[in-house]
Image (cartoon, rainbow, N blue to C red; front, side):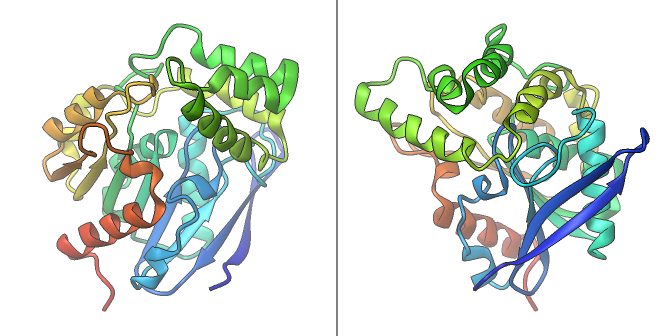
Length: 281
């Protein structure tokens, strides 16, 4: 099942051109994947093709400045939402399911708040946005430290900064390799550093109370991983409390997070879509 590559070109207000590069796989109800900050399109369902096998059309693209997409003059949630709109419009997709991880989760939710008629269902994987600029519960300077590491010493320095604190050596080695593989997919790493500085201080929407207006069904995939200081379980639990039509899934104590397991995650997403009526005909 080889994916079909696509490009979406945007003329930006300053006259520059932005090219968003992505891929399509499968046939059926459309599912758009939106990755996290410093990740690429491969890091939402970890490269799994389970959703196309379950009868869905999978659409994934690299955010501006990430992966194979081109640099941009600025990085923020308003721009990410406009990029998503451009991708959907060029591909002729009026109503879709949106599966977002971290930054992508906030982008998907902000899009659903702006265009409720276009969001058939949402999946929020390790959401981190707490309703205001700056991601909730992040140690002061964490994003700046990662950006600086990438600028000073490239991928190696970024890996040193981004590895989980407090883990044993075996786990650190696994995490370092995963981070390295993710970062090596970026064609413009210095643009990722710019995004690391700008996006966390951007506003996706004002106040978590806005979640009460979201009518689409939402699956929230949380994590108990205490070493992941960027995606606290408490925020996912608050999403579940506020969203009118939400389900929360989280791994058992001591188990590997579902968000890291592409095939299991994809099948959990497909099961959710079928439960809420967004299913292949």
